[in-house]
Structures are given as structure tokens and as C-alpha cells.
Length: 206
Image (cartoon, rainbow, N blue to C red; front, side, top):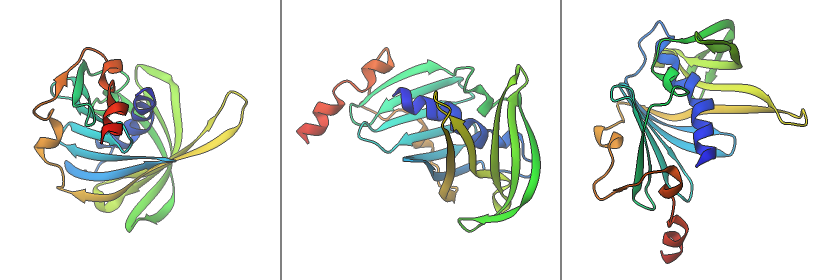
């Protein structure tokens, strides 16, 4: 679960927060797949609600709601969920304090979408010294939605790795309101550690 949360915070903020940055009109409703290195996630967005489902054995789903200021984690395997206040580390997805500096470096077509490519630096008003440098691709036909970005990261030994995230199979209007609520029959638990308890045994029984 920790890995999924890290990916959510690090990778999705600049992509889904682009709605506060673009001058064109972004799609308010869409579904897509997000590929991040060896991880694939299903994405759905409707207004200020976002759903992220990791495609792994535990069936983890994250639902964020700006209006209700909450985040829900649920497991489709254990039929459990936990609800928490929307954390400040994720708030930039919906807030106006995300700052981006962009330098155009030329157009490029990605997965059939004509894109403008930029060198970008992301930061927040309240933490201007914490910056994320990335190359981003904004799809012109999708209101400048960021559909791809890549950035460099280094491990403790100084080894450099280029991380790439890309939205694919984008369907405008594909999200439904039922995607952003806890399904009937799910049990509420108190912590993330309880969320996946029983997932392994359930998989084996099947």
C-alpha cells in the first residue's frame, strides 16, 4: 500500500493538477490508463473527483474528492475501505498553490495526440524550494492535459534513473458517478494496515 501512495503523491500531482495550469478547457470527465515504468493504473476523473486503481493482486483503489475534502482507499479483494481527510501532500491536485515554470521545446505526437513539449519545474507557493523538474507533453486536443512526463531520479548510491509516466487509452466522457463511491457491501476499517488483511488468503481460495 505504501508504494501505491508514493506513486500517487509523486506522479499524479503534476498530471492531474494541470487543470489549474492550462489556459484551454480540460476535459472534466475522462478515463485512461496510466503507465509508470512497471506499474499500470486505471484513472477516472469527473469534476473534482479522481479515482486511481492499481492493477495488482490486492485490487487497491484510491478515490479523492476535493469537495468533500477526503480520500478513500478500498480493496476490491477484501471488500474493505478506509476513509481519511484529504492530506496536504495531495491537495495541490485541486488547489491553486501549484506553480509551474515551462520552457517550450517543440511539438511531438504521442499516442495519436498532437502535443506541445516543455521543460517544466513544479513547486508550491508554501514550499518554493521543493521543486520537481520534468519534461511534459500537453495534448492540444485535450485542452493541454499533460498526458506524458518524465523526470530523473537518483538512488542512495547516486545512480540515475529516468522515470516515465504516460496516460493512454484516454476516453473523454468515460467516467461514471458510481466510480467515485464505495460499493455496497464493503466494510469500513480503521487503518490502511487492515485494508488488505485477508487479500492473500482470498486469492488462494479462488
